[in-house]
Amino acid sequence: MENKKLSETLTYTKKTVYEKADKSIIDTAEKYAEAYKSYLDSAKTEREAVKVSIALAESFGFSEYRLGDEIKAGDKKYYNNRGKNLFVFSVGSESINRGIRLTVAHIDSPRIDVKQCPLYDEAGMGFLKTHYYGGIRKYQWVATPLSLHGVIAKTDGSVIDVNIGEDNSDPLFYISDLLPHLGHKQGKAPLDEAFDGEQLNILIGSKPYTEDGENSVKLNILKLLNEKYGISEDDFFSAELCAVPAAKARDIGLDRSMIGAYGHDDRVCAYPALTALLDSADSTHTTMCILSDKEETGSDGPSGMQSELMLDIINELAANLGGNPAIIKANSKCLSADVAAAYDPNFPDVFEKKNAAMLSCGVVFTKFTGSRGKSGTNDANAEFIGWLRGILANDGVIWQSSELGRVDCGGGGTVAKYVSKHNIDTIDLGVPVISMHAPYEVVSKVDLYEAYRAMLAFYKY
Ligand code: MN
Ligand code: MN
Image 1 (cartoon, rainbow, N blue to C red):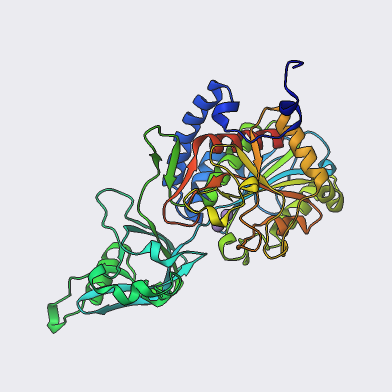
Image 2 (cartoon, helix red, strand yellow; image 1 turned 45 degrees about the vertical axis):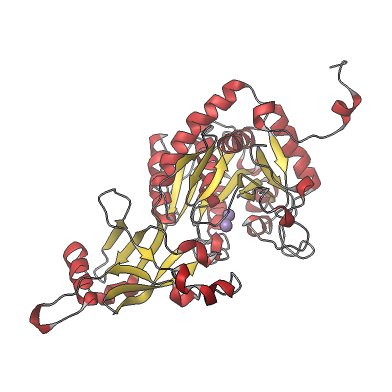
């Protein structure tokens, strides 16, 4: 210690996890990444993420909670909100008035939603009309293999699960793009204007039904859907179908240091937030992990974080455990577990390097989000960040701090402000992502594992 140079003692230097961490941590990060990849492949929509997360929670002894059920110390519960939003919580041994250690990550991701009256045919091809979900760059979603996921709710109350394109023997779906030979005029258009939202129509067939004097691709598709699901065209009105990239999660790089996948934003935070809670369920604190929906469209609706449900569950905890909701909230702490934009050396102009998240440099906390003068941000308290740095240091978690990009270059938001408005100290913390919101995003395995270790420390201290 006494041999350290003054510059080493006084200056902050960002270094990679590879430089800072023990080899055992890097090896464990590899194993953790394998489990994460299989989670991703079975959780491409919020509904699928809820299902696979419930199965995981049940394997750790968690059981279903319904509003009104009795709650006591030591309980390990989950609340399934409409199959799209999940609350997983473990009731600690200390007084509930000491607050809740809360993490919130979202399990919805940008994608292409099918419209309510979608099916038509033209020029011998059958299509589904779509309306994209979340912030996408439209040009990235054409000429790429897609799978179809979702549900069809029928009038008799039954709900049919749809999942076509994930099995290697399944057919896939596709949105066409122009050939370069005829793309001259399109190529001159600004990137954001080159594709019209109404052009993102999903190719679903090209073989007509030709009996009874008919000649209709649409009718043949309806016939196939009827044979497989027992539905007719009007059942689309009560369906939620979406096209997502068909690609599976895979290692990226010769050194296999990264993971490429659809939907890292925000399952790369949902998975560590959930697994760290399951692994630390004997904490003296009451811990809760919320996997939320609708973040990519503004957190509205009953499954988004602007819903009152979180407060209802806090009220139920208070009523059952002899607590006071106002005191519980005042003493709670929250990690808004969401991704950060990783610095990309191919696009240096949009980043400010000193305050950018660097790939492989560990979990990232983000004091403020927003845009144009920090507008619309939670802006975490310095005192709360000081506490956070302390607990991360206790467990040797390797962290960095970031903001989204250069000042006035753009901006974005998370669920942080929808939690902190309830008088709960909240900070954004997550994993840096390359090509965020693209059909295939990239993260570093060591950053993922440091996020898990950060969540473990958060639930524990
Ligand atoms: Mn996100
Ligand atoms: Mn996002």
